[in-house]
Image (cartoon, rainbow, N blue to C red; front, top):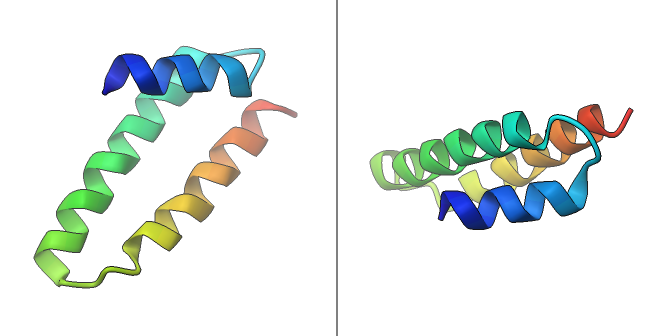
Length: 60
């Protein structure tokens, strides 16, 4: 999974793609755990917004 995330991040940003991949992977793990523990399926929408902000930050 990490390799796939790294490949996507390399396509999405020009700089710091490895750092972005680490952040996205941690976000993904967190959303999975949060969804399971809290039984709140909408956590994916929050994670999607957070990921978009991380990508936007790298593209500035």
